[in-house]
Image (tube, rainbow, N blue to C red; front, side, top):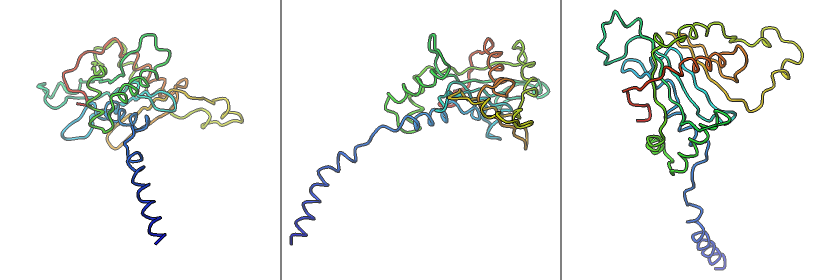
Length: 238
């Protein structure tokens, strides 16, 4: 009998504290950060097509430090897109870039601060699910812009220089003692670069080292900066 009474008392005690334990808590910042990146900063979603998942040939994603704060992402696509009333003979000359960028912060010391503030603002809305995050992003004033590489000064020349980047570090080609310490980098902003062709994909992810694809990607973004304009296509989070 005493065992039964003890079990009943334990059940009452557990019942009293269970509601507090079951209370929903806000998702960790890293979860919101990942959802924001997927919803708005995945360059594979910038040139969608009903025939292929992604029309882009170049994809750039700039993220801040070890935490991967979403700063900006750029996709470049060639040819005509669905819905364009352009003679097919003119499609070969089409070369456009689209970008999503976190809202600007006056006098921001580091680009990563843009992404960190954006994720913080989304989290403060109480959004937890991907759909709620997408809804919250609609009020965040993210940049969603497009540029024509054919008319943007220096853009084609910069695109060509992607082949000159050191996709393989010198320390791998000709390793020498001490190389690993000479290139020791802490909490650097990271850039992911992808060059896509049919049945072929070249990828780089790393810090903005001299002559690296990341350095080229930052140069590409700088070249396109004065050429961004409005775009009628809805952003990926809509």
